[in-house]
Length: 408
Ligand SMILES: Cc1cc2nc3c(=O)[nH]c(=O)nc-3n(C[C@H](O)[C@H](O)[C@H](O)COP(=O)(O)OP(=O)(O)OC[C@H]3O[C@@H](n4cnc5c(N)ncnc54)[C@H](O)[C@@H]3O)c2cc1C
Image 1 (cartoon, rainbow, N blue to C red):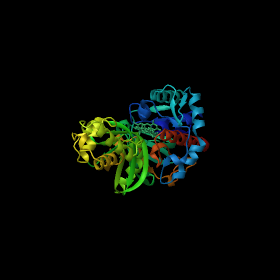
Image 2 (image 1 turned 135 degrees about the vertical axis):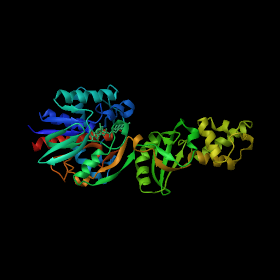
Image 3 (image 1 turned 90 degrees about the vertical axis):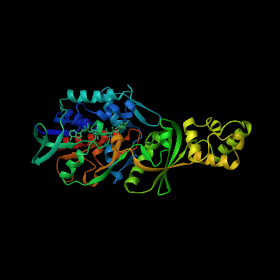
Image 4 (image 1 turned 120 degrees about the horizontal axis):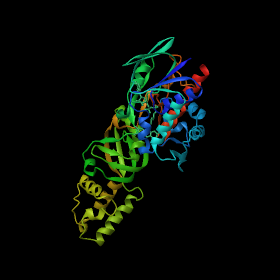
């Protein structure tokens, strides 16, 4: 009987294994970790943002943006929901389209997929790192312990370098290169950013709901709204993660990257300036810090004033229009230079990967080696935050399996 080898028991590998095993193929899955699906387990802060109802290729970044369309159309959200319902994994779809398991627990997703695959007869080799793939009419997988032979097809579902503590590594790229594939340079994404000052460390642990404008070479590139968290190394939070893809690419290309943070996006600079003037006139013995802490967290108010060379202890009676305008302008347009990302170790995902020009978008089969497939994040496809990365992992894993079934 024809055997299929899948390298990586993450989202895409498990989906591929299940679809192949459902059609009674003999499937062996190789996972270097002691446990399968470690990224699923931690995803969405332990809740797993499993997919998104509003899938479109516009939600993905790739050197070849139209590449994802076929996979998303052939196994879209409805198909995925039908699949999860069939195994008893019901989804809770939020108004904005993000989908979570009804259980609200990532654990249930990982457990159900692995159990279902096992019940279908998939053989799991955990603690088994594949070191090399060899091809001689059939494929062999070289591991530290032994050589596994006679596989008709091999699916590389090894993910990316992101989150090395969960199994993130570049093995998939090494396998791809062996079969003459080009690799689009990988970069960390959905990742925190490092800033060129030590101001942020003084506000470490403080979070606000603000607006971030990304400036690349001093030109506005993108605006996001949401949580901004100041940390000891720089900035984090959803608004930051959402601009991190573009910031990371720009940094990789040695471009100037700056952030303009608007701490109070619901107020205009003018309104803030008159608020400061009005309050200062009313409470002459207040300090400037007292004036600002009614609208900003204390650490932020203190640091902002210091960063523009104004003493937080200055008495309100000394505040004039020029000063209030200076403060208001900084509140709505606080500039920081970005010098780095927080790196692959802390990134949720990675951009770049196996060049999509050398993979058949309708089958995920290598155009360089017959019966060799790539799916999930190892491929140069990166989704936005919101369940899009899992959506592509499920869809591309499903697509590989469909082609394998047809070819046998
Ligand atoms: C903290 C965090 C939170 C996230 N939250 C979300 C979310 O809520 N929604 C969302 O859509 N996406 C989320 N993601 C992204 C998502 O987890 C990934 O995009 C997705 O898991 C990719 O699936 P994959 O199958 O391609 O790779 P992975 O899930 O990374 O699986 C690859 C597997 O291959 C194994 N492997 C690698 N090399 C070898 C080898 N040589 N031999 C054997 N095994 C190997 C790895 O150990 C790993 O288990 C999150 C990621 C992180 C890190």
